[in-house]
Length: 150
Image (tube, rainbow, N blue to C red; front, side):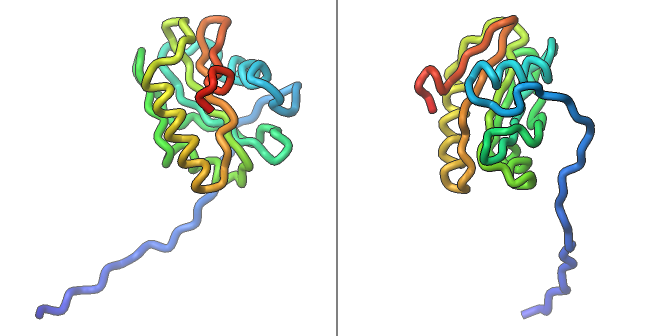
């Protein structure tokens, strides 16, 4: 058998890099409405779907907001790998996920429900709860927790 040459393995370290910050007057997320107010302030009026993760500490205070995916006019993908990466790096106790519907209609799709269920399962495995998935529309929102999917 031929001797294979050695493979070089990179030694890395991971860290979050703060891009900016914003003030959140409520300090903690106690309800879907609180989450909506924070997300509305952060997302504003985007022309594409943004899938966002809010990392929360043990008191449900937001510690970090991360845009996990920027989609097209009508699609965005929330994969557990990307959603939990900022949560793990920021030592989050739980996360709130959200995305906007540029169409203005906040109703959840079948894909939204499937992604939510997948994220909840992944969160249980790694010990980070998904407290809600909020879908934002024009001046309105839908909470998948309130709808019974979480």
